[in-house]
Structure formats: C-alpha cells, structure tokens
Image 1 (cartoon, rainbow over the protein chains, first blue to last red):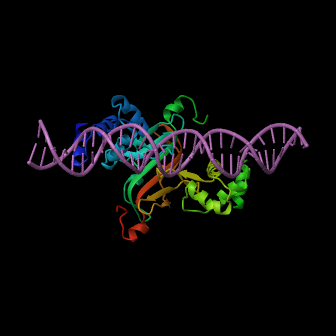
Image 2 (cartoon, each protein chain N blue to C red):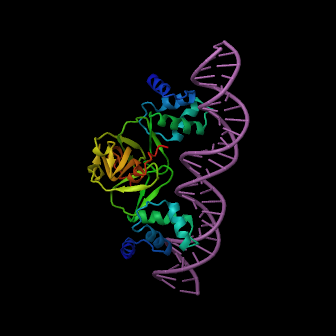
Length: 140
Length: 140
DNA sequence: TCTTTGTCAAGAATTATTTTAAATTAGTGG
DNA sequence: CCACTAATTTAAAATAATTCTTGACAAAGA
C-alpha cells in the first residue's frame, strides 16, 4: 500500500482518501470486481462516497498503470488489480473471472499485419474447474 | 445468402424478413457493425423495423452460430459475420475493428488450469497500419 | 374456422456509465 | 499553520446501450 502511494505521487496523481480507498480495496484482490462491487464495498467505510467518484478513481488508477480494465463480459467492465499482461477465463456457470497465467507469444506487444500493438487481452470462456467438479455443465 | 437460409432452416430457426435482412446485411460485411449500425442501415429498406427486433435477430443469428459477438470495446458490442475463431485488432485512432488472421495455439479450444474452454477471444489494441501511414500516433 | 404458438413494433423500463454544477478539499508557497 | 488555486467530490440528472412489455398479427395445425 505504501508503495502504491509512492508510485501515484511520483506520477503526479492527486491523492484523496477516496482514491486510496479504491486502491486499497483493489490491492491483492483477485476477484476482478466491477465498479459497482467497489462502490458497494467502500460505501460501508465511506458512507458518503459516490458512484461517480468510484468510476473516476478507477480511471485514474488505470491511467496510472496500477490496474487494468477487462471487457470480458458485455454486461459490465471489471477490473484487475494486476496490471501486468496475463490472460483471463470467464466461467459461464459461476460467472467468476479467473486469472490464467500461461505464457503466450501473442500476448507480447509488437506488431500484427502492420498494426502497432500497445495492448492485448485474451479472454477464455467456458466452465471453470470448480464448477466442473461440482458436477454441473454450466448449460442448465 | 442461399446457404445462410438453408443453414438457419436446418437449425429450426424461424425465418422472417427482418432476420433475413439482418443476415443479408452482415453477410460478407467485414466492418464489425454494432447493433445500432445494423438498425440504422436496415431502417432505410425496412422503415418499420425496430431496434428490439435487430437485437433479437442478432441474438438468434449468434445462437445459430452464424455470427459472433465481440466485446473488444467497452462502449458497445459489435458483431462479426465470420463465426470462425480468429483474432481482432482495435485501432484507438480510427476506432475500426479489424480481423487478424494469424495462427495462435491459444485460440484453440481445450483446457487451461483445469477449466474447460468453449470459446476464446483475442483482442489487440493499438494503431492500425492505415493510421500509422497517415502520420498520426493515435495519442492526440 | 378456431386455437396455438411465436414474431413484430413501439415505447417504456432498466442498467451501466458519464456529465453537471455547486460545495469541498488537496497540494503548494508563504 | 494559513491562504490560495486548481482539482476533486457529490448527488442528481442525463445518456446510451440494451432488454422487457404489450397488443397486434401471422403461420400452422386440428
């Protein structure tokens, strides 16, 4: 957390209690929360926080390179507190977004067909191991 | 077009003029239109068509495996008339979505980390070759 | 013909997100 | 520590994409 504050300050990001609260909630969070998840959680500690602030704080953190945005679901954007490139898996049954850490050459920035790449997202869809174990297909 | 009709009929999809119009507009269209693009275009030929009908027609075609949905942009979903797996590139400058036909092992269905995969999307982001040639970075 | 089933259009409703405008606060320099 | 200015927060309203609802209507079968 201290490191986050340092990094943000170095990037001339204005620090506010709200932004720090968002950063703190996200830190180490592997659940890939949506903006609304963040809002509902922070409201307990900061009853006056508004949705707009959560949205702008998330955008500030994203631009600062602290988090990344995922469009794995069309319903809503979710956020990953780990900004380094890796893949994601969406379970159609339990609706969770899981990190997938496999090496993939295509995920490296570079060029394709003459287009300059500055970012890549790889989204897998299916049924996660936990749901498979619980005996359901995710199709019901 | 004839083949589309055959395939849909074989899948017990009820054929209607509206659905056929959507299918026809998409056929061979490589521009990755949004639902609203389809609606605005079809309205010329079918002045009475409604947005809801376009949305449901697109969903019917998707479920029939004729088209695929892309969530490459968070603003809105767009559609690809080619349902076979391939990658996509989003140009931050001209906002176009381009097909990327490169082989990639990760795009093959299978398993990762014990999760069963039934679909994959690979999205590249950057500046397309055309915009690069026109001399702008896409950052302005 | 009567019934059943399913689609269509239009608009209302819903949901995620952004904008607005006024009040408050963070960062800076004295 | 105080004051100043630019930036942020807030609540509410506005927007934009998408979904739902309702009544009208059409095809297929008994």
